[in-house]
Image 1: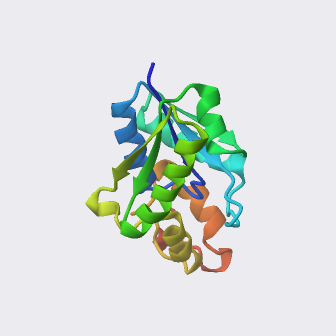
Image 2 (image 1 turned 135 degrees about the vertical axis):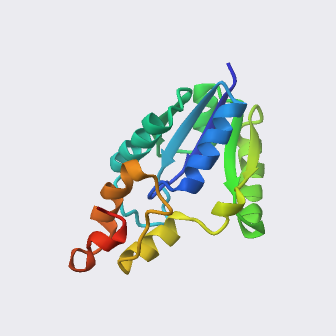
Image 3 (image 1 turned 90 degrees about the vertical axis):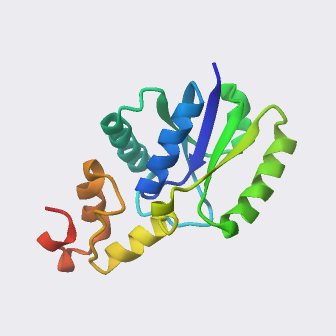
Length: 172
């Protein structure tokens, strides 16, 4: 069985992430979405909440060969532990590539048995990131174009301030 790990903070999960999940699921027998701790970022959702959101999306999109897990150690150690042959990383722009390329080289040294597979984003998601979703939500903007419907309410409840939440923000 060819297993791939798709790591990230997914805070929150967006259509861009879902696109990478779907495409990875076509390439591998099993894809593990690995929700990890990013020590540089302050999350809006707990790690357990992020897993719950991703599980809702996976159920809705019927990605039967995709599962979610949590890890707070080295990615290479996790990949080795689960017997994965690949690490899936989504790339939006050249700026993503430089950082991800460095990480891929480090992971290759730490665990030579796994390859990093870069999937370029679909054109409609090139600008999309969790940070963009959070910024739009912070000002009461409509984030329904950026996150799956099945988790929209959960995200708006957390990210859109109560004093500016309303029916015109995609959270009907």
